Amino acid sequence: SEERRWLRTGILGHLDTDGFVYVDGRIGSGDASLALEMGLIERVLLADSRVLEIAVTTDRDDRTVVHLVVAEGDRDETHLAGIRSLIETRARHTDAKVIVHNRIPRRATGLPDHPALAIAATGDER
Image (tube, rainbow, N blue to C red; front, side, top):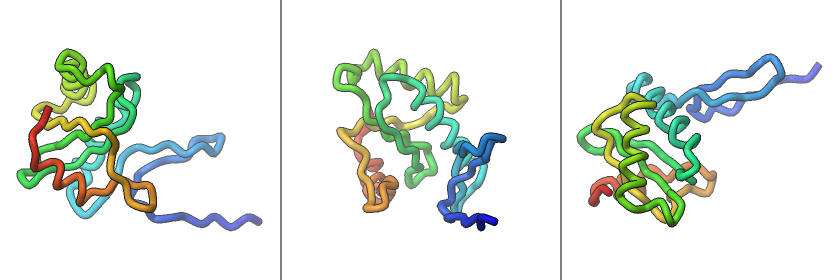
């Protein structure tokens, strides 16, 4: 019989009856409810065609920071206000800081580079 092996990534997910894997959120050294909240923000925004990439972190004050890459034509304040509205209404999260990037910095593994994002979070928001 085939032996199942699992890679521990800190990502929460489940398998459906057809064997497909779904990502439900993340776990980490911090608050698990915060990780699930971050996963919800990611799922809501990735469903929007304006959002090309996303990473959600927190800043030094534990404020949620949403790092986005959006299409070139969607970087004006009107589009960003629409994205903020999605965060507030669909992800039910208020007071998130939104930072627009040209690309999300990534580690060699392909995962977001959280130290680089933390540095970006200390700058101005859009």
